[in-house]
Image (spheres, rainbow, N blue to C red):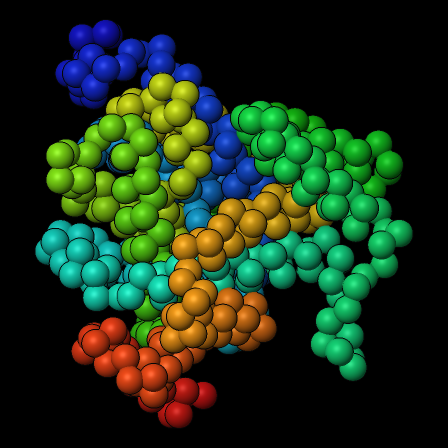
Length: 433
């Protein structure tokens, strides 16, 4: 067995051991396992079957992790991405009025496009043509969007006829427990406790049960049926012209999220060469895109690489065996469906808000002294949550970037690809609304 693992993952060559890889895999799983509760909670609001999405989430994550580990030999774990699942539910389905089947079709096409771009090795050209400022803005905008969703799920922020939103009733159990869950995560993270989000979700669910707000359904059972979501994607529905911006948003966010995650984790694992290049990068990117395609067929939103993989690398994981361990644990998690069904929305709200805090960290890299850089960031940061759409936030960010750079005489900061994208977004708003 040792010889087989060595042949597959070159563990000794990477200065690691089977024990270290197993510890790394368990650590990564604990830090990202919250997604098996959060993803069904979000996608079920789009009308999808909760149990089926739970199984699809675990299977899509397992498939992505196994491909990433066995084929690309990267210690990077994958699962349905935060932000992208929110965009799927709140923007595409609830906001734009599409059926969730058509949204799955858009996820499918974005995954195919991602695979083609990776195979043709033109990913670097696309990324380099998009200004760093806009990349930072998109991450922060998604963070603000997630914060709004988390606050809504906890009833901390509620609707208001006069002011659109207002503070909810802070005496409600859901509000108090959601707030406690968020602060618990922050406290555990500050103390460097692994799996802080998972611990918080389970603890708040337990409190909800003790207070009589959660019904006990059991812990372990046979997995729910995948039939309600399996192969239910609507390919034809995704061909709608208005869906082009949706497909682009899925592709765009996944492309930058994956590239940034792979670079950060690989550098932490010491995998880069003297020039900072990553080995087998195309394989890693194609593993990510393949997982998204598989996830759309199973019944979940875009699957992407998780930055939480860095925790496993810090614990000793340096090869694909770490990702394989994570994948096997996601398969095991399928049998905990009753536990997932008990988790109320307010128990996952703290984790959603915590993820938003992490994404807002990108704002520290913005050049706030340059108004032509700061203004587009502010537009994306504000308009993404206020329009309830990642796609519209991205579009308005591109348009504002081109306009302020042109009016400010900073033509050298522009390139034709950004200008063309901005023009296409303007055309979309004029003719498609």
